[in-house]
Length: 439
Ligand code: ATP
Image (cartoon, rainbow, N blue to C red; front, top):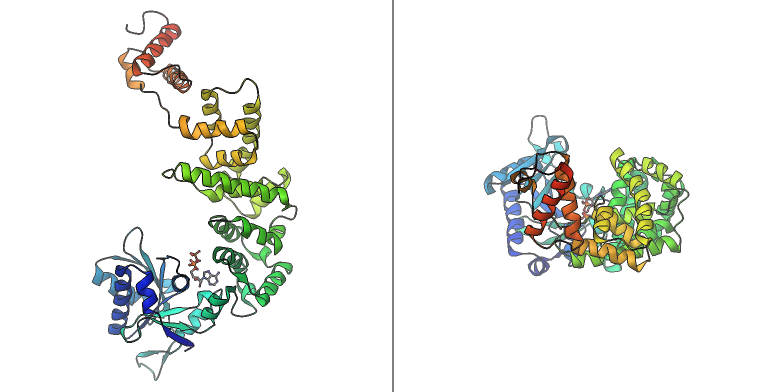
């Protein structure tokens, strides 16, 4: 059974009371159905690490789907079942979803007998996992609620701050674990164990990463770039030779590190300044990494990662346009607010932040900062409806007038709705000739 220890006090200290109640109810239903039920994986790991995590994974020794359906019915919630995999998701609300998996190793004592769930199927389930720190289980049935089950030395490795695989073929079985090891190592401030590190190096050397499909590979890279601070993880990817196999010509030199560090700084500036504006920071890091590539290699890497066509085109477009815009911003005289707005408006915030990170020029950074702080949400007070009411016949002139009004507004030439209307009227007068716009 591995080493057992009761961690109910840790549960009480770390989890909201409703979650503990929920875990208890899982166990109670398990008891009624004669199943053993466990919380497993990242949830238990993070519990011991005292890191908040409400992504709950449950393993049922028994019929997981039957369990999920019964639980959903009792609680009046929804269960989404995947018959093929014997798994289900219990959907409580937006924030709380619980994955239910089946650990079942049934055997029949005699023909037509009821199946007996073999003792130990939890262990088999946990043995398939990536690292020892992810193999901890928490018993939920009432008679053993809060018992920590540790078959593979997960507690020891958490204490040692070590990422270790369970067996020597782990990376062969699934090479994405190479990237997962790096991600967990950096996230928790752990270190890949010596033996595991040598298995990783070997796996990279014999080309296991090449066997991964582009989408799986990209998914893992994306997850690394989504970490709080991906820079050390990218550095580790370089150390393990992972970057090099993904892109043979990538040069992860001091300049590349500098770019990523600049991105980190720019992102924290943005996040502090605009708490409410959603941002996908990983996209900025991705641009930063790709920007180190020669144009020819860029195409190859994007293909290797099997990115959707529109995303590939967008990345190529971004690199090209960013250089043009940076050039324009440095010309004299400095661009007016409307010119800054027009130059930056076609970009997503992530692309603009990449631009900001790649330039050292104070005037460009200032222009971008002004764009985010002052210009990007500016709109004319008048609308098409106002032009209609003035009697201007609808047509391309509407866009022309509204654009001009916006520019004037951005440049501080207009301050009120009245002034906007006056400008619109004057433009219509000029463009359409006297007599058409109502006075
Ligand atoms: P995160 O916090 O990034 O979501 P996690 O470990 O909490 O990490 P997942 O990555 O969703 O969550 O994985 C859930 C569990 O499934 C892990 O704890 C791990 O045991 C197992 N797992 C996920 N991917 C693999 C894999 N490639 N090989 C083996 N086990 C895996």
